Image (cartoon, rainbow, N blue to C red; front, side):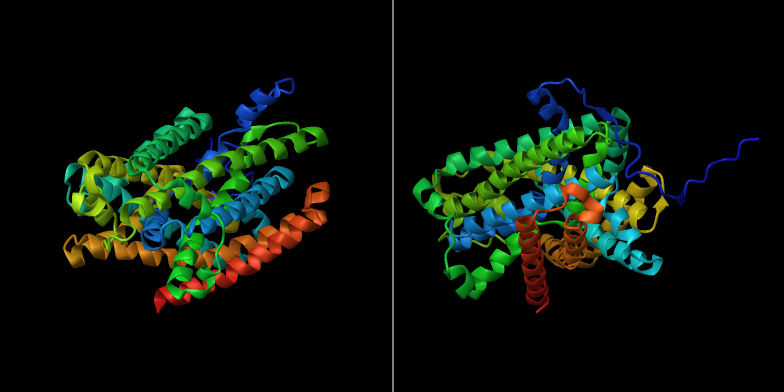
Length: 447
């Protein structure tokens, strides 16, 4: 008699085994064909760099300091490209994701502690998705916040359906939603008609950022909202979704190269979207003294002629809400996969995807529902919850980038693919600076 398999069991296999090595890359394919086949994981990673948590910070940065903080968006994006390429390389070369690698170097107790920290960070990200999605539904259809929050739980079914269709389908859907966001903000910036000379000068760093405390805090907020810890775990896992001969050094080098291309191309798109958000804030709201600290404020301002002038229209506001909904749905997919990776990697516990999704979503909606009940659906109180979720993300970032830098710089782990000296020293410099900045951001947020 066959013994029934337990739903919850210990995992010691490959990372995300349901998608690992499922995309075949023919050996005789052309350069462009291979680039296309390796493209996709970068899109899922790029989602985390343009999620709802970034929007308020970027637009507020433009509204407060016009285009001066574009240099911070550029620097943050370059840092993200380096860290994500390291994460992808780790997964391809070792065959393990960052969580699995960290667990092999730590004991059971420390592994559990690290899982708790990262689980809280993913839960914080999920809260941002719930809030963004619920407010988008309220803006588009006039639904009460509590109803919008409950509707967001239905994306459990959406994700389960997508996983049945195959990983390439998930990549395509995510890329399509990114394209929607890109088009919405591209159109709104075109309508806003910014002064492009000033925009270009904004990419040149200025000492004022370091001397003006308010400007520095906003710059730190942009950095903190850009580099997301769960993306490093995600990329180190989904980079293994391509099937190639791991015993062939030439194919290994090829996989690392094409995966890095994919990552950098997609993160360039995320960089452009974040620039568009900041440019939109600068072009429409700089000097207006408008309160733009909440999604609802932005929605209302885009259709208020007293704020943005003659270009104000319900269409701009509606497109903003559509992009917000698309962003929330995209982040849902990547948040679920990241949660599965850290659970299986750190505590070696494997549960069905539907159970993982339900547990994660319930953990995210409970604090939002409590907030809605206590404050009677007040959007400001709910969106303030979004601010404090960034604290957990700031705490989790050093926990992920420090081991990533250690592993990818170790020749015993990476062999010939270990970081060259310039990359190793640059990665350590970035790690130290980001850790200090995030500690300062936590202090500033709480105080």
